[in-house]
Image (cartoon, rainbow, N blue to C red; front, side):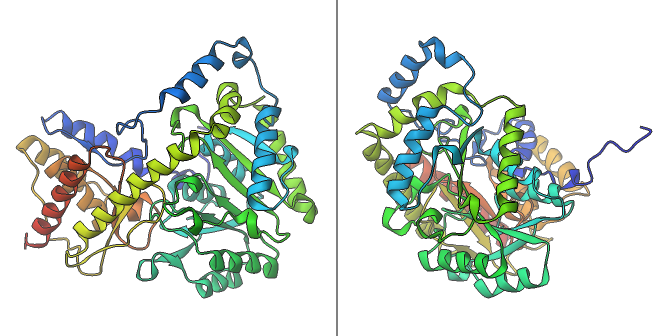
Length: 437
């Protein structure tokens, strides 16, 4: 090409959660069944949407209006519902004009970073959810800037580490919080969130809180929405339908803007997000149309509570099952539906191996491990685990921009006996790996 057409940040766009699928599909063709633990899709893992929710969606689909454009910011009925309920829940006023719908949080996250000034960076957690870390890194044309979550302290971040990174990185203009966290399942303690707010005040920053799993906290009293303690700081809170209804295929997420008038630059930035959405016309109408009916239904709260009870029970089982393996660390999740397995120093070794289940799978494994881009030992382990057992997980280093090696799987298997079987498969593989040299 006469001009380099590749964006300078294109190399940061990685999504290992789906990237491992191509290898898994090739292994599957060798006759090894795949256990898909790589992606957080409750429907794909067998969860059934209740009939009453399906009826609400079906009735709306019979309404011709659901096939029309919605207003750019979103249907007024949906925004009025969210404005009222969120204001009541948090004590912070949220106007209908400060809610903006997107085609899923992936769309919202991309717009949030894309329309920041290229020199403005967002400091986010590590391990990091890859949509945030990849798009922010691409925006900044370098690796995503992170603060460490500490597994030895329940994955709670070190505030001093955050303050030092802000001090020595003057380009940092915002802090990202994912609460409950993906991939660790950690819930930010209220006092830690209050320290984030104070840091933002002291350093003239704004805050971003991804709360897509807010209603999947195992103990609702432990979860604090950032809006409850925002105290005048400009902020963006991200919410959506995909995980809690669950309805990932709806691609329905929204941004909530707080204290927009507190800073003129922030106000202009929020206006640019709205203008960017206007260029796309609008987001999908149908999920917005049914949102108030689903979330306000008297059956909804009990339905979500029962789901979180199941995840909590499986989180406990997983922590107990994996907790006694030398070199492996598991912090029991407190929210969402993921399990992070952390590998302590010395567990991973280049001479340790897991043999594939059959010769064809071994050939595929040898080929992929020989590729120059597989440098991280936890990624090698995940590929060996897949070829050996069919268990498809995601490495922490390449999948979640983590400085600590490990893997992430889900808590979504609805059959408890099958879930325990998958854990036993992982335990056996971990032990075989350690004793392979």
